[in-house]
Amino acid sequence: MSTAPLLQAKLGPEDRADYLRDLSALVELESAQVEDDAGTRACRLDEAFEALENGAAHRALLRYRYDGRLWFDTLIPDFDGVRLVRIAEDDVIRQDVGGE
Image 1: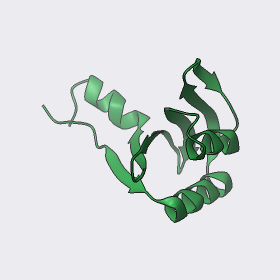
Image 2 (image 1 turned 180 degrees about the vertical axis):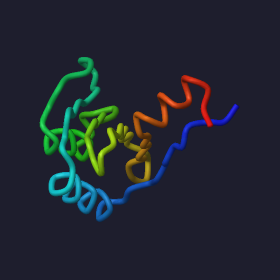
Image 3 (image 1 turned 30 degrees about the horizontal axis):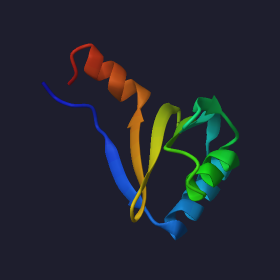
Image 4 (image 1 turned 90 degrees about the horizontal axis):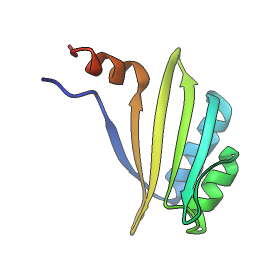
């Protein structure tokens, strides 16, 4: 059994600024959520990044369209930056129905 392609990366402060700028300019954002001590709530993209930067969020969940595909990004604060985990919806669906 194969696994769905999953991207993982560590984002430092400059990387996060570039990533936010790229998302704001290049994608069609479908949803942004943050998970904090009170639970999970919808928010704007800039609010998700602010919550990560100020330590209020345990994670941010982003769903967006880019280049004809639906993407899911999870951002998790780490001791030396923010970890990005990304997967495309069609990779998950392909995996669920038997994969390639």
